[in-house]
Length: 284
Ligand code: FAD
Image 1 (cartoon, rainbow, N blue to C red):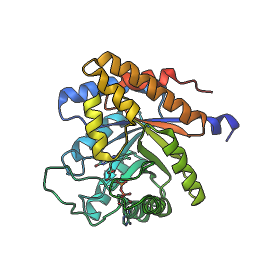
Image 2: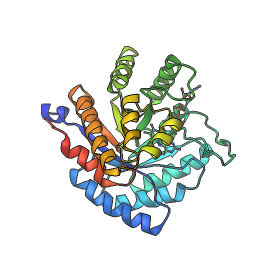
Image 3: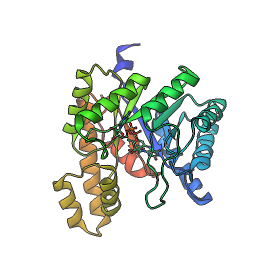
Image 4: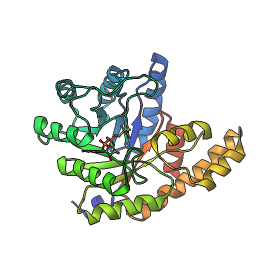
């Protein structure tokens, strides 16, 4: 590997599988725009409640047909070990070599409980390694601001360690707007001798109410100064977007300048906000 290759930052994008034909057409247009910056891969989320499983598969199938490296998310909370292995075999037959391995969350309000054989993502990583050896490059989730169900920060770090020791190749973080949380998390991992790349997950800011709702649910903190400004813009969508672009571009620049190996964008199936941030970056 040459020095320039080692210095190169990795960019990847996350999509969710659309519910309708029209949504799928929009997704295809947006992915073609995103693909212009040559991402390392494009990942597709997976609804643990079972509703999106087929749609995740179809979206991945389309990405593959376009020659784009696709990484399906797999969650273990709602499927048996046999079902997971069957799904992975289908992906393997499609030529998929990369997956994002998660526990998953059951959709709220459904009253559904997990019914899988596996309880945590480290068990899923171990299953993938035992059944498929090194065929799949495995990404797992990491939480610089800590997972909302973790009893404390140390327990969460140790649980992250279990995923790496089970065979994860890399991690993507939950989104955050406080770069120090990321740098401290990376330092803690280094102290535990965990050397996998930890890629910051980046959520563009385009809409305050949905971001606020989602952040409360997943434990990502919107710092007070950002919240207060977004609240003050109320329905002024243009100002929210302009401010969001500034804040998130600065965050990304700081992360990359201080050693983040790349960025994984939660695109919400929209190319525009992600590409604007990307355009603002000074990539050495
Ligand atoms: P785990 O690593 O299993 O951790 C879950 C909780 O259990 C943590 O609190 C952890 O500290 C604790 N824990 C872990 N292992 C153990 C153990 N062995 N014993 C005791 N406690 C343990 N959700 C979806 O449904 N579909 C998706 O496609 C999806 N994609 C995502 C992509 C990324 C990059 C991220 C960051 C999250 C994604 N999520 C997705 C959300 C994720 O499923 C939730 O955050 C879920 O609550 C935890 O998943 P995990 O894989 O991090 O779980």
